[in-house]
Amino acid sequence: PEEIRVYEFAEKMNKPVGEVIKELFSLGVMFTKNDFLDKDSIEILADTFGVNVTTVNDQEAFDYVKAYDEEGEAGEQNLVERAPVITIMGHVDHGKTSLLDYIRSAKVAAGEAGGITQHVGAYMVEKNGRNITFIDTPGHEAFTEMRSRGAKVTDIVIVVVAADDGVKPQTKEAVEHAKAAGVPIIIAVNKMDKESANPDLVKAQLAELGITPIDWGGEHEFVPVSAKTGMGIEDLLETILLQADLLELQADPSREVKATVIESSLEKGRGPVATVVIEDGTMRVGDIVVAGIAFGKVKALLNDRGLAVKEAKPGEPVVVLGLSEVPGAGETLISVKTDKIAREYAKKKAEYLRQKELSKSTKVSLDELSDMI
Ligand code: GDP
Ligand code: MG
Image 1: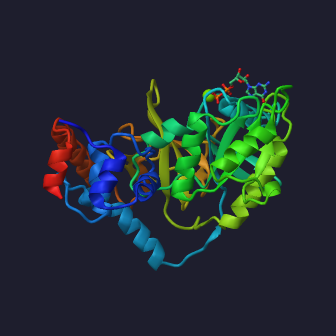
Image 2: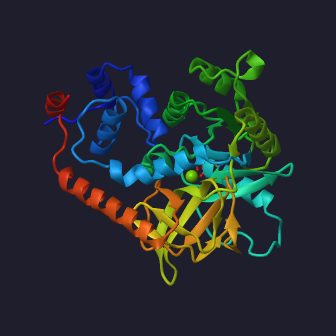
């Protein structure tokens, strides 16, 4: 039987396809209109749009995150500014990795203890006494991997376009997804050191996609940069901070932690290791946390340079040690009051995943879906 594509699903739901893509993006999953939907996404979408196609009840497993949010809304708020979280996207070979590497190495003082020792999936740099967090996983991959329920991990998307190559299919995709989700876009026009660089062509091509530069009367910042020479990188960081000011990003460091898992792995001698970005609250060594099927007492926290720290604040990336399992990317991590609660939640989640695995063999077809709605 035929599977269902995003636009077909939208037609069935009587919704504009953009709305469906936007909804998926807000859940941390990137789809274009021609992509096939997986069963998970169909279930989530059906839930969002109030139709009943769900075969597995995941509500219980996620209630605790909702309870966390409600507690925060009800309680006293001590909101302070938090660091913006940035994802870099763009066409292959346009310089995403080079840009991240340049920013990181330029911003870590030479000889600083620890140096850049390892890849941790996200890092933070300082500019004008403020912090900026970069998610250091290939943008597209990270987004598609993240099946977090409602956790938005990116505040601003930087779309890198090589000035000697112009707009390419993945550039368009990145723009499409960021636009649909309402995440602000900054364009980094890269490889400006090259003789063949043609920034005006990049501007014209993006203007056609509705991303018009400010100097052409539009609303989007285009920052000419070179990840090779470092030209324009400081401007790019300043532009990020200006954009962050507009977003008025805030969090309450006095409350219990809520974070999003960016990357995770099982490491020899260290066990399950997860890199998270703190969304709200403060995480401390000794906290009892749960992230999907993983739970445990935080044994150690490492910063983006692999150095042990006692706590991590909103907007900060941190590596967590002490979990019972490897949590999935995109999973929400929160702290709970007792070990018993943590175990209970993790068990529920495991049960849910097992049930879902069992029902996976049945691919949802167009026909089946029309039966269900
Ligand atoms: P990614 O696929 O987007 O991560 O692109 P990479 O960062 O791997 O870069 C692809 C190629 O372009 C590499 O050979 C880089 O050295 C080169 N590159 C990246 N940025 C620049 C730049 O600003 N100027 C020049 N001349 N080359 C660059
Ligand atoms: Mg790369």
